[in-house]
Amino acid sequence: MLSVTWTGAAGTPVDGSHTITAAPISSIGLEIPVPVSVIAFNLGKPVTISYTVTRNGQSQPSQPFSLNVQSIPNQDGALPTPAIDGAVGNVLDVNSLVGIGSCSNVWHCDVYHHWLLAGFWQ
Image 1 (cartoon, rainbow, N blue to C red):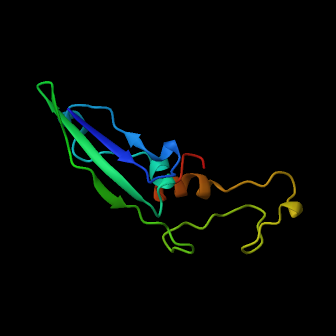
Image 2 (image 1 turned 90 degrees about the vertical axis):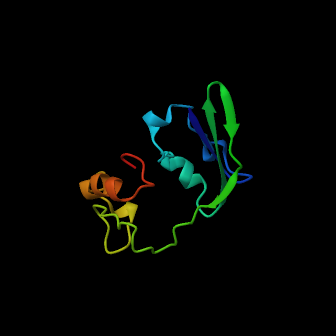
């Protein structure tokens, strides 16, 4: 059985830490998914990763190791540009919108698949 813990830096909200429930390595593999919300809470901060292997009822914890989560710089070319109905150039004046302004389907569908920190329909 394998359990992995991702512990956010001091001062990080509780949602910035996560423990994967112990499961057989054969079922979860060696690539352990971490919820994108956990990564988002730790952008630009160090985190501590540890794991525990349990065999025949005996648990063996790993030594913790530090991992630096890089931040995403402003104007990063890898970030998508939202297409917002009613925006003129790079400015969205909500006072000039007629009816209800909405994000285009490109923003809702395309970004979710290309930007890993986006939540569904975010």
